[in-house]
Length: 227
Image (cartoon, rainbow, N blue to C red; front, side, top):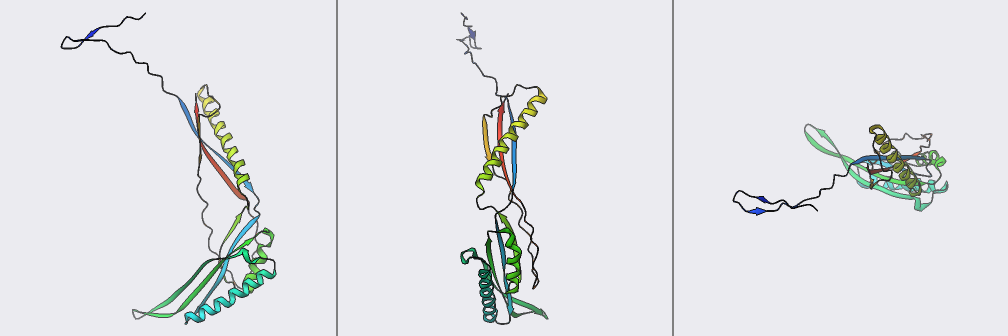
């Protein structure tokens, strides 16, 4: 049995110090795991539209509406459903010029952009050709997507967890540490969005050969391992 040790302070008072048990700090290895899966897209969003100019705002608007309706009807004749054509933006801008330091209104510009959902990637080139022949003269972006991304993301997430385990094993093996293979903490992390596509202007009659791009799906996790 351990005996208590009596101690005295500077005034001669007696006291007994308390024994504290401090557990050693937990030693951990923190790593970030990443998994990326590349999948062929099954959906394409084509953003295309009509830009018209006139000295009269009404004339520019009327011409724009006429060409937009012709484009929509032509797209429907090649199999694009009405519900797959949505307005993405609509704007009317005044146009000015500067003469002798004087601002003069010279006309108006009307721009009507549409998002067209294409379920068959092979038809994208025909969509552009049909749209341009029937009035479209500007395109903003082309998005390759998956109708259901979740199953592929779950695979990428599993890859990220395995990647985190592999990194922790390498670190532990290099430092000769007794690593516990199952993480004591794991958090899913967000990853940066891809940069926006560059605008592209179409010349009349142009039918670009669209090459399908694989969609990259990335998952990231932060994992904590004890050794």
